[in-house]
Length: 179
Image 1 (tube, helix red, strand yellow):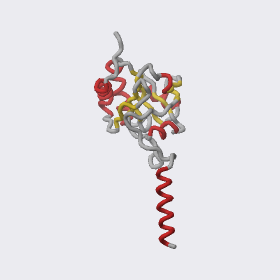
Image 2: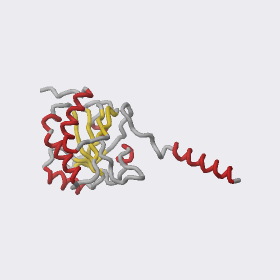
Image 3: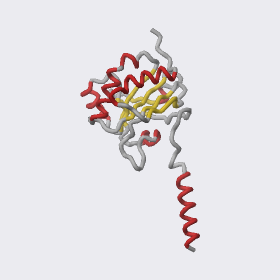
Image 4: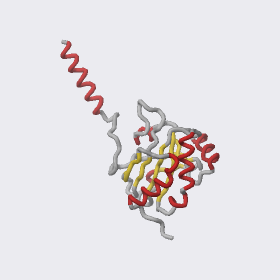
């Protein structure tokens, strides 16, 4: 009987682990999960808005008004000229409310929007929030015009992230804007 219970527990664990609720980790080549999120500028941005038009960068960060997140956002602002050479829309994103991210963006004088996902639904779809981790991982997603993930940076360096994103866009062959 004990062996049967152990077998049932093992099979239950295996089935639960393989269930759709625990989606596989995203990787390059996968379709990017759709989103529709409010930006710090008050506009709503959806992945579908950029399909077949422009590549996208979404840089998730853990929490507004914290040291590392401040450095990362400032780095992207400082590299704006290099980033805007590419045919790309770029955003940072967090699970903070739109009001908090609006204040955070204003305090840093950002020239790009911070996307807000207070329900954490999109963050979960991207795997940056898990049952074990409520605050998003500091991961950056590069998404092609076709809506497929080109790359995921899971080792973001906050102080150089802007320059790193520009270098990655170049390496990935993201088109530059016509001058």
